[in-house]
Length: 135
Image 1 (cartoon, one colour):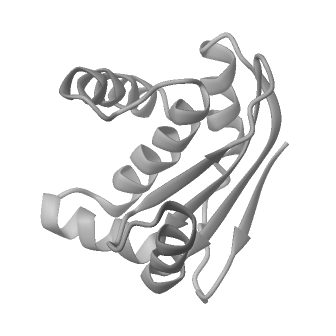
Image 2 (image 1 turned 30 degrees about the vertical axis):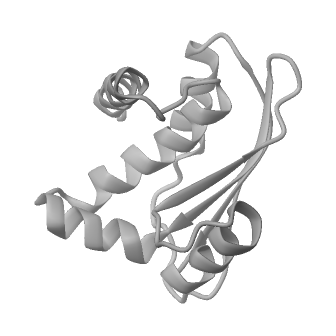
Image 3 (image 1 turned 120 degrees about the horizontal axis):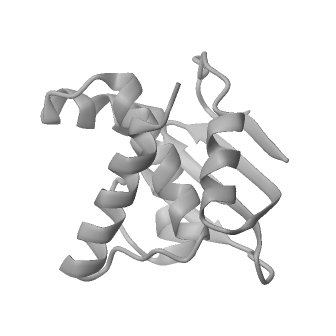
């Protein structure tokens, strides 16, 4: 089951992305377990980044993986504030940037990495592919 929660923000994500995200999981030959998206602001995610990853910088997403075999489980923290800023900086539509980040978290849980240039290119290719399949 995919669930959406909100911390330190008043706004909410208007569209239900659950079916699309589940389709990504199934397309990757995985099974849906329990996935929690926690939408928050920059400060909330910065604190998580500092406390759990010892990183002292803003980010748009942090994924905590609790995958068991082919069953995808995890918590995905998303800063809507950072997505808005990134969309502006990259001259992208906010909704498209949001979909990219939502897919990015799922792809991490499916085993994709983005530490090397090659991994990052593969991640971007997968994101683009799944964004193109969004209805």
